[in-house]
Image 1: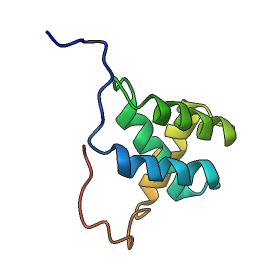
Image 2 (image 1 turned 180 degrees about the vertical axis):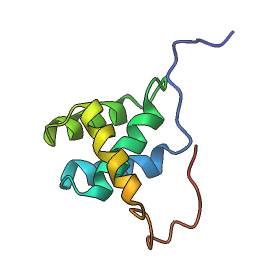
Image 3 (image 1 turned 60 degrees about the vertical axis):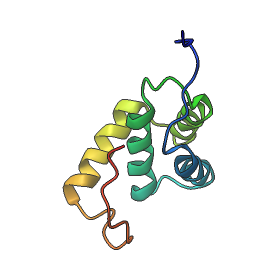
Image 4 (image 1 turned 135 degrees about the vertical axis):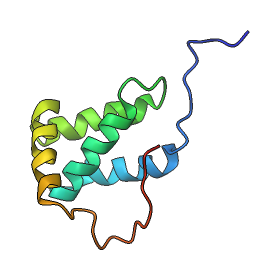
Length: 95
């Protein structure tokens, strides 16, 4: 029987870890805010990647935002649209 308390490895961990490192070193630009919100949603309640979850909170605190304020700001950014335009992502990332 598997141990249900064992942390899982997120399939996007390696890529997300790099993004989180950039967020910790960066400023609260529109792009960084939407990346922080995207990853906060992705890892909310995820049973693993504790370091990423901790560092996402660090970035939020560093930029002196609550999660609610972050989501409010990023909703406004997305309404203006095109924050990801021209970045060559070419694929949706819903994982």
